[in-house]
Length: 172
Figure 1: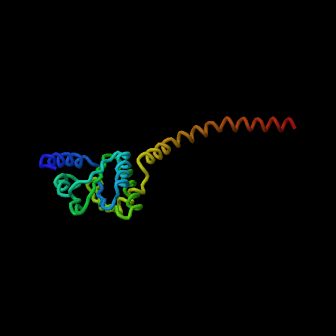
Figure 2: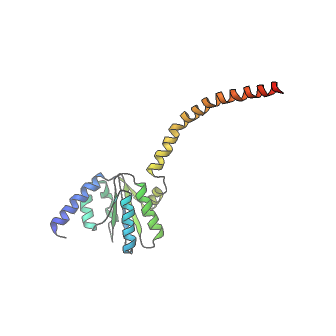
Figure 3: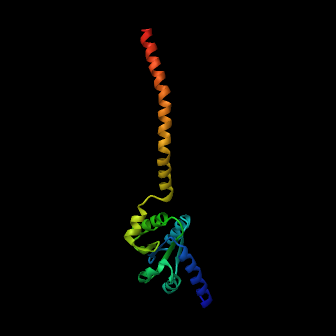
C-alpha cells in the first residue's frame, strides 16, 4: 500500500472511529480462511465492520477519538470491530468464537469512552439484545391496558354466570 492509500485508510478509519459507539480488538492469529469468512459474514449481518489493520495505522487513526485509550492493546495481529449501534450483537458473535476457538482471542474494547476488558465483552454478550429489550419494554407498557380489558370483560361474564346459577336453582 502506498503513502496515499495509507493516508486515505487512516482518514476513513478516523471518521468511523469518531462516530463509533463501541469498538472491540481481537487477536485473529490462527483463524483459518473458512472461520474468518464466517466471522466476517456474522458480523456483517450484525451491522458492524470488521477490519484487520496495521497497528501503527490504527494508532494514527485513533488519535483524538475515544479509541485512543486502546493504544496499549495494539500489539501483534489485531483485528478491530467498529460498532455503530447495538454493541451486544457483535459482542455475542465475538464471545462465541473466542469460546469455541482455541486461537481467536479478545483483547479489549471501548464502550463509549470507557475501556472494557475481554471479560467485560463476554459479560456484554450475555445481555439480551436490543430487540429483546424493546419487546420486554413494550409488553410491560401494554400490561396495564391488557389487565384492564380483562377485568372489564370479566364483569359481564360473572353477571351471566350468576344469572344462570339463579335460573338453575329456581328450575330445580
